Amino acid sequence: GAGVSQSPSNKVTEKGKDVELRCDPISGHTALYWYRQSLGQGLEFLIYFQGNSAPDKSGLPSDRFSAERTGGSVSTLTIQRTQQEDSAVYLCASSQGQQETQYFGPGTRLLVL
Amino acid sequence: QKEVEQDPGPLSVPEGAIVSLNCTYSNSAFQYFMWYRQYSRKGPELLMYTYSSGNKEDGRFTAQVDKSSKYISLFIRDSQPSDSATYLCAMRGARGNAGKSTFGDGTTLTVKP
Image (cartoon, rainbow over all chains, first blue to last red):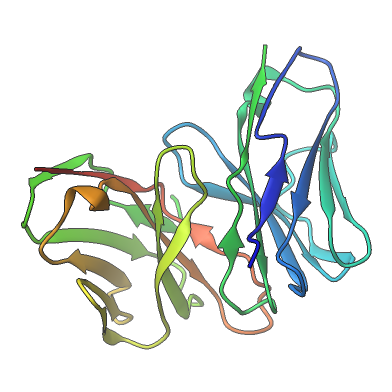
């Protein structure tokens, strides 16, 4: 079956612009996670959703970052007024429940010039 | 100090060698331990998932957990060039502590033919 998909696969933007990153989880998966991976680094947790609610937003780096999930499915991560330090790969994962195996998408590579 | 420390590598071995990848952690609340494999420009792929201390084997891969020492390892036997990738350890707490995982920074492995 289809895995986790993310779009766009690559995004180049200018400092100060807003960007939206999209994640389509595996059908039926109730939990959805956003992580950020900087060059040569491990994954940094950003936020997780159980259904449409986000019980844990502790990883969002600043108030420029926000995320929503609608219909228990698609999620959008929005970065406002992008900065060069926001450049990274943004990975989305989904799982059947919050303690189940997480399946990752291919990521969105964001470059802020 | 990071909660999860992973041997940084990079690691280069000849084909057929036994590979040992290691992580240590400081948070005694971690109870679930995972190893992910990440190929270049791809999302992480779950390789092994363990809960208790001891060994778990799957084909050429063996995951070892020592909770008393807060140390986990992944062994790869008869390594192949196709094993060349970045390996990430990850761990998370018990049910009720949310599903987010804490990752190591990854070890890049190259298996030379």
